[in-house]
Length: 406
Image (tube, rainbow, N blue to C red):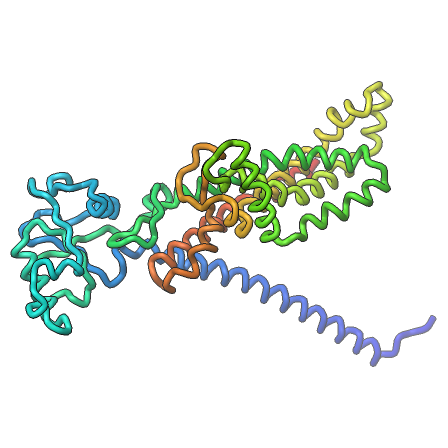
């Protein structure tokens, strides 16, 4: 028997150790990278809840005689929208609310009194609080006098409840932003629900055909075409939606615009088809041949065997396919951004525009000042999306574990 020389054996062991070390290092670096990404995402996102909704570097104030000390961001918006016009509605005196921004200062003082370089503006603003006791003023913090004669209105920090259940998403309005993400969450789930309702029956039918009915030649022809569908960039699906789906929906339903939740659902349904078909077909093809033959031997025809034997046996695999399809739909960005209309309203029908979380992040992140409240709110949206995806992945793992345990 031929023996390996000791030197060659040692070199071989060293090579194995080196490969093992490289693989271990690769796995460690990958895991740490993922953990760092998640840590950074949540660090930025949770920073939102330590901020007030008032625009950074701005002051909201009232007269010192006004008993109103605190207002919510929703009340501030309603006051500036003229929906609340009397101080009594927010716990103050029975007097009309007069709104004031720094641009209105020339209505009260001359340019000489303000100063050529606005050097007297802080004092004029302070005096104005005494002169006009019913004012609600909003001005940059740099013009706040040291002996300011009014008092600043306190706004509570944004809470998790306000963030998740708020119905208005206006992250850039002044003087107080509105950070309610409920329309975005429901918009995401609404479009994903529509997508899975479209994609699941179609994908399941195609999987049954490919697994049980199609000839090997036809299957070998269809399989690469379906896999090619998965490789098409999402922006191409978006263009297809804009050119074909959106005008079709507008004409069929007589809508003013065709960018609706239905358009997003159809596009996402098409994009989810490859995942659903491939996973469902693989699950069906694992049905033991003995079970199929036993069914046929007992007198069942082919359709009865598919309905009574193959689909029930593959149910966990089909469930996994549906969940993965939902995951694809929830995380999709570009195509949805192009065809859903991007209106942050709570959806009540598939024929109205909606806005999803990924589309919001993609559309607004470039305009949000780094480190600002808008920037952190978008990261908080990313946290919600991450948790949604995590739940979907854990569900897939659970269903797969049940399938293996059979």
